[in-house]
Length: 236
Image (cartoon, rainbow, N blue to C red; front, top):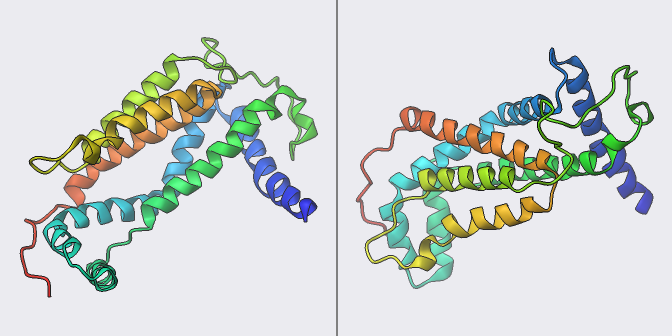
């Protein structure tokens, strides 16, 4: 059983990502690990673009359905409430799993990328590469700082960009809303900042590029998926 898990992790996940990093590094016009991370972050987001758009569309549609959803929340019968909510989302073609799928794929990629920078790039690439590597692999970003090392300012910038994204995507709180209703918009960036402090800077850079991509996607989606005035029909 352990051998199966090792095969799945090493041969099907870790080694392909390792080779993707090395291949991107040696084939880019400018061989720089920072540009490699930026390129890979954009590549992942572009590949996940259909799911990202579905998630964005779902968020915009839920915003339109908010009055109906709020009325459903007041139904005393929990079972009927869940059934009605599920039916409402289904009738309006709302895919609530798309955003979770995008986030899950990125988290898996980040976990593998962490192992690549933690261990893989400190060894001879020929040990794991599917091809011959004739150039030295440096982990610096234009020689300014080491992406395999930790720093504090990259996590700070990344956490700040996450706060901007949450500010743009979180609905305006209702009048009289408590701090507990919007706490995650502050707590999540702080949590991400603390976690990234203990990880290689490459993780911060990858996440930063992905967040900037999400901000741009959100701004563009506002014009693609226009929200109609909230529906006021009664819910049976």
